[in-house]
Length: 346
Image (tube, rainbow, N blue to C red):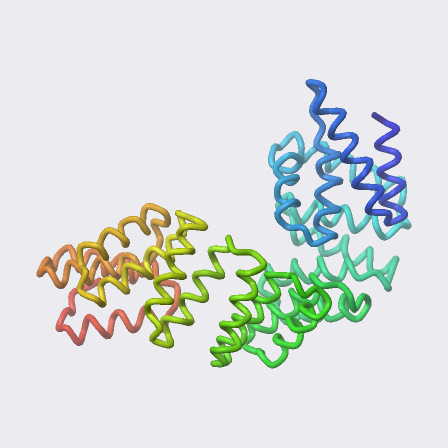
């Protein structure tokens, strides 16, 4: 096995990520035929998946390499040995940063990414992953700075363009986000995430019909995306196209039966049509999937209020207010209670 370790390390130093993946995959296959366990080939594959922007695949290999304490220690020792053997190679610092960021030491990874940048100023990957650390820590301006640098160094770096667009959108800078999404679509027309991101940004701009077209294209490319069905349903509902909204919410549940937000949305539509019993069933199903769904508790409170069961209504209002993260929505619930003459301490 030492030969495979050496081959992988040499490929990491060269930045030959296809070779890293090829050797790591072969190593993992060899191990699967035995009773031996080693997290290192799975971590090497995890690194390549992250570099390729393959998040789902990266998560699968993460489970085989960085969840158990013994595995984390094995990978830690390996990355430190690589650093000691190759202190002047940027990619080794990059890989060490990826280990730290995925093993509960995100802030420590910052220095490793910065070391990689010093050694190879023209490399886009360290800027990209450093941007992710800043974004997770709420340092949005620093994240944008790093994503922009990654895109500047590699204009074809789609994941960096996507993250840059998302970071702009989170700041409400839609006029900056939308060009990033459009550029991703230009370079990769069959990327469903890019179409759904663009649809979301256009919807926020109030450009409903273009947003609907982008959501539809995202669903054509990936019909099983429950989140996009839900988002499209929300756009239809705001436009009063309730039949289409209901259809999309139901399709979201078909794609993911535990999608609590879709269940809650259906519940509210039924409640607004005075189908109280059916609405209550929806809210209860939503809470079984997500016990912290504030809108489901609010819906149950409204059902109890209509039935004249004020004590039970207030208990659910209190839970909705406790769980609601949006300050404006929380204030709206309180104002509605006051208008109804309910001034109990919730």
